[in-house]
Length: 378
Ligand SMILES: *Cc1c(COP(=O)(O)O)cnc(C)c1O
View 1 (cartoon, rainbow, N blue to C red):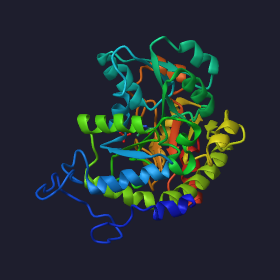
View 2: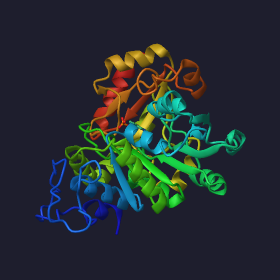
View 3: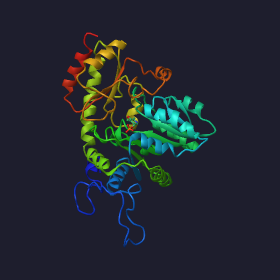
C-alpha cells in the first residue's frame, strides 16, 4: 500500500465501538473495571486512551515501526527519549540541533549526570573523534535546523550499531512521508507533531516510533512513569492533520523549491539553504535517504539591516514554529536558537542575516511578490 492510501486507510481510522469514521475524543481519565475478567483494555488514561492509541498505532505504521508513542509536545517526546540514558552516560548530538533539544541536553540532563557533546555529524572523523568510553547514544537531525545540513544516516547507523549505541533521529522537518529513518537502521524516530503532522498551527504534540520490541517496552515505561502524554483532544487533531499530510507536503515542497530558486536570484540575497537546490551541500546524500527536499528553507541577506528590514516589511507571518498551512518566517538567531550562546551560534553559522521560511499553502507567486517587495531597496 502506498503512503497516500496508508494515511487514509491503515486499520486505525474507524472507531471499533461505534463505527464512526472519525475516532471519537475519548475524554475520560479512567475506565470501569467491574466485571472485567483478566486485564482490562483500558484502565487509566496516562497508560492507555483509545484516541491516543489510534494515533500511536497510526504513526507506528506510517514510520514502518512497531510501536508509537504520543507525548504532550515535541520536547516532551525528546526529553522522554533522553530519559533512556542514565547518570554517567554520554551522548553525541548533531551540532545545529533544534534549540530546545540543545537546551534540554546541555542545561537539564547534565543535572542528572548525562553528558553530551555537540558534533558536526557531516564528518565521520568528527564523530569517531568524539566517541568516549561512556558514549551510549547518537542524536541526529537531518536536514538540520536552520542551515539544512545533511547527515548521512546510514554512515552514522553503521558507527552506532558496531558499538551498540542507541540512534535517535528528529524527523520533524521531513515527516514520515519524505524520510523513514527506521528503514535506514535508526532505533528511535522523534517528531514535533506540532509542525507538519498537525499542519495547522493549532496543536502541540510529540511522537516517537521504534521498531525494536525491548526498546518499545522501555519507552512505554518512561511514557507511563514520566507521564508527559498527549491529551485525547490533541490526539484527535493530530489524527485529523495526518490525513492531509501528503497533499499538503507535496504542494508546500513544490512551492518551497520555486521560492528557493527565486530567492537565489534576488540581489539582496547572499545565499539560500535548501536541499532541493543543485548546489546544496549534501544534496546527493539527502536524496539517497529521503524522497523530497521538504518545505523549509533558509536564506541569508547581504547585511544585518536587510534581514531586519525584511522582517518588518514582509506581509507573511513572522513567528516561531513551522509546518503550518500558512508560510511562517522566523529569525533563528533570536527565536528558535535564542537559547544558544552567541559563540555557539557563530560557530554554527546562525548569523543575524539568516532568515528561515516554512512555506505554506498560499499561492507561490503571491509569496514571491511579498518576498521581493520586502527585500527591495536593501
Ligand atoms: C519545534 C521542534 C521541536 C520541539 O517541538 P515542540 O512541539 O515545540 O515541543 C523539536 N525539533 C524540531 C526540529 C522542531 O522544529
